[in-house]
Amino acid sequence: MTPIFRSGARRRSLATLVAGALAAGGLAAAGMTTLEPGAASASSHREAPLISGHPKYDNTDVYAFVSPDDPETTTIIANWIPFEDPAGGPNFYTFADDAQYDIHIDNNGDAQGELLLRYTFKTHTKNKETFLYNTGPVTSLDDPDLNVTQTYDIDLLKLHNQSLVSKTKLAGDVPVAPSNVGKASMPDYGTLRQQAVRQLAHGGRTFAGQADDPFFLDLRVFDLLYGGNLSEVGNDTLKGYNVNSIALQLPTDMITESQQQPVVGIWSTTRRKNAQGNFEQVSRLGNPLVNEVVNPLKDKDRFNASSPWNDAQFLKNVTNPELPKLMEAIYKIKAPAEPRNDLVDVFLKGVKGLNQPPGVRPAEMLRLNTSIKPTAAPKRLGVLDGDNAGFPNGRRLTDDVVDISLQVVEGELVGAKNDLGDAVDANDQKFGDSFPYLAQPVAGSRGPLAKGTAGGNSVRDQVGNALQPTGSADGTSNTGLIAASVGSGAAGILLIGAGLAWWRRRVQRPN
Image (cartoon, rainbow, N blue to C red; front, side):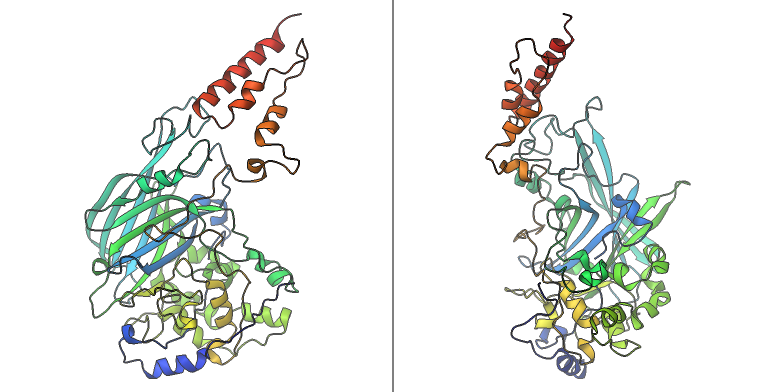
């Protein structure tokens, strides 16, 4: 049984360091090296009743970090469509045509977005007379064999008190990287991924397409907090699943208010066209796992439709959280005293001296101090372990937000030292060193058939046996060409079609 508690060398007391940080609040955040606060939240996969039935509009995660290979820029990644099965054809995964996928940036701490980056998508189908997503091997995004494609536009909206000041088109008709159907259909998916990375006129870069789900955790927390006896930890339950990602890299001075105020608040939303033809917000995500484990059922759909400047209505969910009470009931870990003002400071304001903007209005969003440069050796526990470039100062792909969140919710900031975690410390796929940093999506051809069976039979043998026709006059098999064509691309598809046509004629021949 893998314990939920961690052993080994204990890091410095978080509570002691936070106390010191608060005392030194006047110091410039860029110069702080000993701040070690935590986060009070953890990602939203199927997090609310209404949105769980509409995955195309469901935000799963938001990441924001100073770009490690280009520290004058900031990278924002937002993901949608949880639990994409790589082999989920014939209708693979597309962004919705009737939605606005929005990334919001608050650069003055007033809980309102001053900048809004809006992505809108359009689906194109070359041949509607086939069920195929692709009709042959795809070697480029403009390959005629890629039957279903998507393009998107990016608009930059500048706002003041939620009133539109200006609207600028940053890009138009940008191609989306397709779902990774498999090795036969897309023999060099990396080339397709790279072709989907595009430069923006204003000095940034953009990407939209499928990716391996970068969030790593054991989601069996919902089985009475890891089985009620700690027997259900250590398994990355998102391993093998993909998401649809939007990645945007912009010059940092384009999104911040000034060099003197480098902190930005970031969240994403989805707006869907309703029956009246108007757009309404149906999903929202800032910090990970908030709407999953912080908000109760009665508030989940309302949170998804709300905006940060109205977050006072959810304050009690933070000051009187349910999770510590459950931990106490199941595992006898004493819940910290309420109200949890320690969580309010980190969760709704940002930590003073680290990523709290002056005059901040409490609101739930991911806060990033863009003046803190990336570290060459990121630590998975981020700020908890002295790495101020990590969560909850923004969120990097490698940050272990579940362990951080569990430890803080259980009282790290109020002196209750613990090493809680889910025993999943890293993603199963390696992240990239350059934009868009995401790991490539798991291919639809993955799985036991792709490697053969224990008896040594290959997928070709299995398909050949499965397509063995019956009732043949001479008792011999005539499907050798069909089996041999598997994995041969367009020629294989033609041979399969010819073989099946021959078989139909054969079995229908009158005696």
